[in-house]
Image (cartoon, rainbow over all chains, first blue to last red; front, side, top):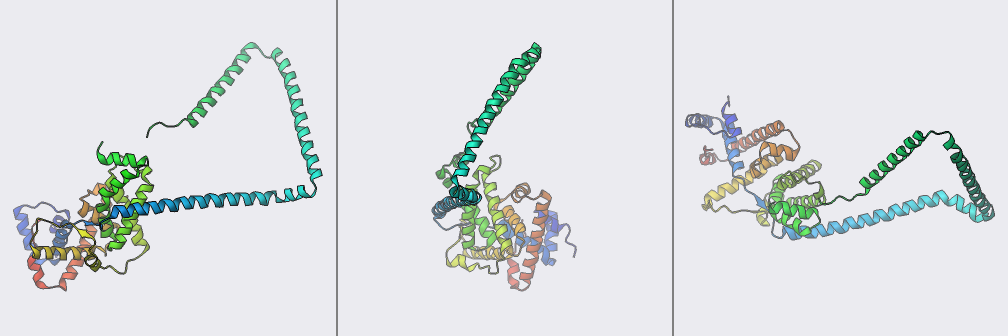
Length: 174
Length: 200
């Protein structure tokens, strides 16, 4: 059976003229499919809202409180396990060194002292070398090169300051 | 700024009382959507509660240019669709709502005739049973269209579909419902047909 255009009218709930309605009624008498389409459309258009049992909001508040506690507990456990894991990893990595230090502390102490002595002497040497370079360079550099150098340093400093300010500023309002 | 926008804003700033106002306002539409999607009052209650919990947790993601109602119904629809896809509901009882007194359907003062009421109730139950055979997304589209008068654009936004896909799903669902109804009626009493109204 040809359902056009009746099926389209019923699906789109098109407003029909009296003539079209007469044709539709005639078609519906012989077409069970279009009758079913009309009937289900009528049922859908008469559908009602179902509401929850009384006290829904109170039950929600209870659920929300439970969920908050569960979330807090989860975060605490997460932080605890993370810290414990980090400590275990650290212990695992440092265990050989600690064991070695505990068995022969004298050799470790001499290594550490030697390292600090090396660091100190290196820094002093670099400082002296820097002083020599600074006392010699002005004789080689023309005055405009100094201006360019200082401008570049000022520009970099400004860029750095602005970047830090943008990163740390707190947004106001929502 | 209306009350609802103020509540949303206050809730976003951590005011639980304001969120409670939103729960009060939207409990019925959200519950109804879940009930029509899942078919069982207990499942609908759980789904509605979960919807509000999800909304609470994701309130910072809410885009205030959208209606709050559309946003929360979208959460409910997606939750129900996921739930239906994860688990096929083999039992689809409608008796529980009468025995337990839930869900509560709003009485219509314009139809006091008990016989008419009885027929309407019967239709609602038939509709409830027919809906369960639709694909979850199609069912959500039908519910949003007929229970909430959502436009095809609003349904498309809520279900993350294109408008043409929504139109096609609605037509497909209507045809499927008609087919199921036709099959059901072929086994039913012949006198039922005399009650059919041809008016739009």
